[in-house]
Length: 609
Ligand SMILES: Nc1ncnc2c1ncn2[C@@H]1O[C@H](COP(=O)(O)OP(=O)(O)OP(=O)(O)O)[C@@H](O)[C@H]1O
Image (cartoon, rainbow, N blue to C red; front, side, top):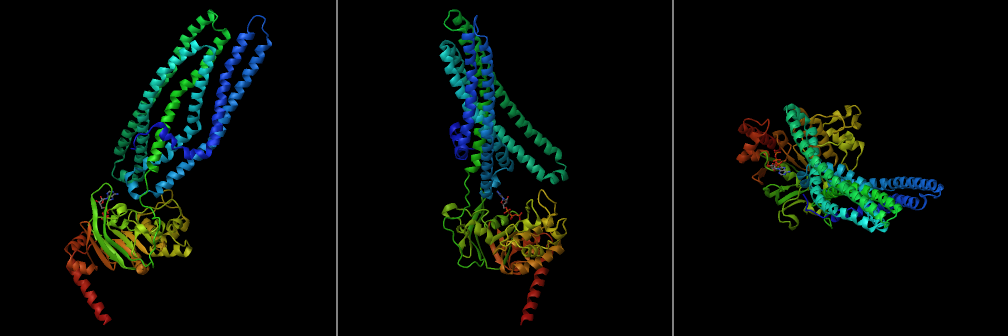
């Protein structure tokens, strides 16, 4: 949670967004203000009517004229209120949309480490309900707060001109209201922020359970999920009740005190009128004005609550917007003299924000066009290491660059422009994400030339021919809103996406894990052809994936402990044998496998001679 800021410090930050629509907001404000002035002038018509005409011998036509004037003023007031709406609604929705788009853009820029820390529901509630509330506040709450304050100030001024004694009684009632408002502001700020955060957590729970619905059902946990949700929803309900109670208490005070003042004022007014110090017309006009002033005062509880909620929504918005993106392009990006795809880790170290050191002193050289498999026990940091290449995470050491480096053709990946780096490097993860669009758009997402031929080639290499048989072929909508694909199908589309990007460096995180053995063999055969010119770093969880590689790097205790061919490592590295033995479908007898591999190599050597 961010540090506490004052109301005006927070609201001031809205100004750059509001500046373009300021003229219309001012027009809206003027309309509302004029509506209040019109409302305040109605009692003055009454005053003139009572003082000058409602007496024996007074002109009867004056009553009709007054009625017509009051009617015209009433219509003018209604027209001005409608005009306020007209002026502000459109621009306020524009501000809301722009702020939402800039939030979305910033979320796209922010690092993966940021997204690891933030629950999706918290971001969702900021992008949707907080900004929605801000729009309503700009279009209504903020304007009415200014108008109300001015109406009360003008109204009290008018009341003073009519009777300073009665006006003082009203002012005396305002003092406790001000003290109470101050206390209310502090308590309400806390509770409104709590309710927004709880709503965000609730949204995260909904999102998680919708995504995990199969697991919840399969493990029969739907009931527990419901109980957990119920608990969270109940917490939010309690907070909302606390909010409503505080608002109700405030409304009680701001309604009761002016009414009390009205009662005391009535007695004092009659006394003053009986002594001739106050005319009957002024007394009537005073109370009519007091009624006009009391309405916005009673309204002020709601307006204050709205303003505090808007402040809290803005604070939540800027918590995200103020988070700096630490993975950015340098001011003077560098390019390799010749892009060949040589990938080098130089004493690279890495730790997740909330974890201890995971990788240290990683040194590994992958030649241009070489395919290197990365093998290590589960949790050893293979995926983390891969993600350093496209800078999904940066090596440790920050700006001082004390945590080693990852280089492509000699250039530190931090010296590339991020856009260029991500065209040089393409990735496919085991856990695939497809977007709600067609197969074609998913596959050609990063393709330099999004042609039909590129699509066909990528689908062919990834053995994703099934895409042509989908209801609308490659134009079938897939992803969350589209047709559900099997795990293996999804992986093949994700692999096709990485291939279609035609990268110099391909980073694959066990991308074949969900394929059956036959399909995997076919994909591997085609991949071998395609990978000839592409430097590839591939996490291998299966011996068959290891077989795809020219060499294998062994990740052990946070460093690369050995590099060599599969056969070399089998022959000399005990830990490698242990890791291979623990992989799925591993050959049970590694010694026989080693002998067989060596025989094959010997035969191949003799054949060449
Ligand atoms: N976003 C994260 N924040 C903090 N810690 C993480 C994060 N992702 C992974 N870890 C931790 O870092 C360690 C290495 O994770 P990583 O996924 O790189 O391992 P791996 O070798 O790829 O594992 P596997 O073979 O099971 O896929 C694990 O202990 C994991 O719990």
